Length: 550
Image (cartoon, rainbow, N blue to C red; front, side):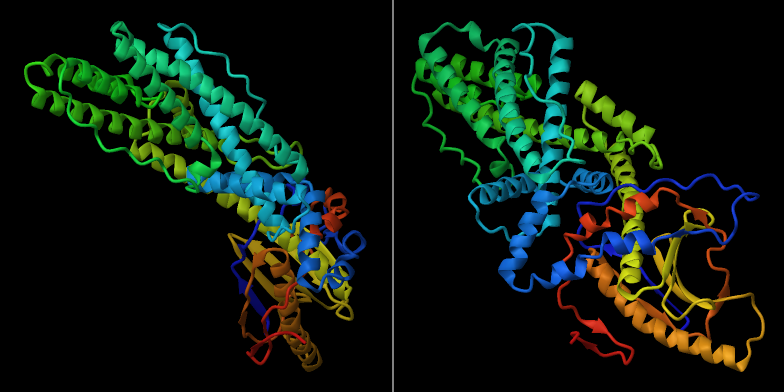
């Protein structure tokens, strides 16, 4: 074996991963080609307790207790946080609501000292998704209030929404974030209900529903509006949006009106069921159908029933459209917040997406839906940014894996960057120095590991070739260990071995840029590794057999 390659993928986003610092500008005159950042001393010291801590947690109860305690102590890293937000921006309302339900349930279990089955990463994912949902609802509500204020007209200005600032999960502890989520949910619930009541009054004014002063009409309208508000509030809970609560079934239509009075009462009940956010034009069609029913009730009851049936259909369609518009606005808000996110100071900037941001800003400011081509462009930009973050995340976790490989087995490790986006991780195992080392290269989503020897191309002596073959044979076992470590860190990495003759020539650290600030981050590896509990895994051995270790 001379080299192997793999296509790493993320199984679960670990919570404590931060953005790496950017590489400094390349100065070809001042920077030696062999300069790389050495990881082994700081990483070994920082993560030295990993094996001991994991070894003490062999039973299921201990594992669960460790995960619960670990999740409570961890702080969400900046890279983990924005990656989870990006994944949330690609999900629908129902899946985000499911995350909010899980986060609330896990917090209740923690308060009642009950065991939580979810891992730390799963708990953080649920809380991060819930935070994206809250922020999106907040953003969409404020945008709707701003549009209403700009339009003016009856029934006066909308109420000022008393909502807290946007949630910022990165840098927060899980218990504190869950507490903020609960308080934000309550505040949003109150603000949305107040806005919905105002929207009802505006809709009534636009459709002239309150101009009829008949007592039966007004009583039926008030009762029906109150029912519609209760339904609206119930449907805005996470349980309802996640599909945990059944949507109220529509009752059977009442018998046709026998006189004008009954037609007015029935029509008022139908119009009162309008969603507070219903489009005025669609609501106007329903109101006109009710007026036609009242007008025809005395002389043609059958025709009045037809008009009331039409009114029910207009209301159902208007309500469905209102729900879809609400969901689209909140999805746009989540995507907008993700695309305008700026990396922490000192980290490399993410590629901007001004075309998608402009479209999302327009749909939130004006309340107009995105067209099919516009939605496709926005989805593409969000996906591109998520993929860029995933690539950066994989780089960080692979660097952690090489650091852990060095801690377990000794030797020296260095990290640097070659040309473009190439990331290089060099590890010199014990007894390999000075002639050989392993080089892991990450580029365009592909992880390659090669056995290297110091020198240039040319004929090797028989003794050198024999040592090359020995190092290549040892590299097989090192790849197996690297697979195990990356799996424990939440990556799916399975190497395909490329059978070639001998090792590859190279210079240790050639064409690499030093990442000066990574030493400080390496000191945080102990916290990063606390969420790692190595599980028995199936290993691919040199003979090609798959079996459990031991």
